[in-house]
Amino acid sequence: MSKIRITKQFTFETGHALYGYDGKCKNVHGHSYKLSVTVIGTPIKEENHVKLGMVIDFGDLKKIVKEEIVDVFDHASVFNKNTPHKELALELEKQGHNIILVDYQPTSEQMLVDFANKISLRLPHNIRLHSLKLQETDTSYAEWYAADNPRD
Image (cartoon, rainbow, N blue to C red; front, side):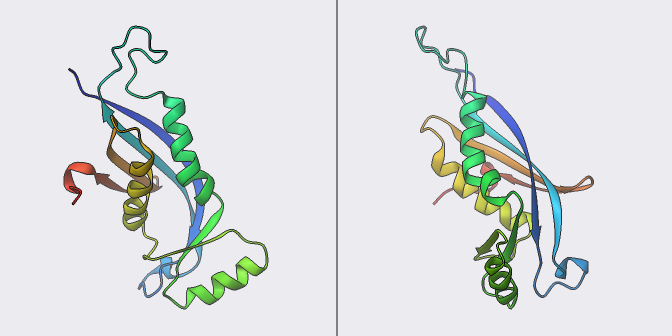
């Protein structure tokens, strides 16, 4: 049976700050992120199945990624909860801002690890997450591949 990769792309706006960083990104700022999610599986062969020929319906993949990532991170500010930025984050939250406190430095690299875990848990048993690509700017992106990250 042939394995096929399916990719869906998403966009969202997110702010963050990198505590302890030695460049401009130590300041609160934002990005127009582009996220590409690629899954791998075998197309459905059951003749009477409504999704005959599909690995996964693009709409089903969209629902998972929107619920786990886009709807959560879009127009939010992400801060490491173990840094002094936490005080700023809590004050912003009091003022009605959408704040996400995470256990990691909110770099593109670490966000991908978080996203991979969240998406993988929601995929049907016969579909595997193959890769993620998170583009922070027109010229900068990070990638995550399942082959590079075997599950224990």
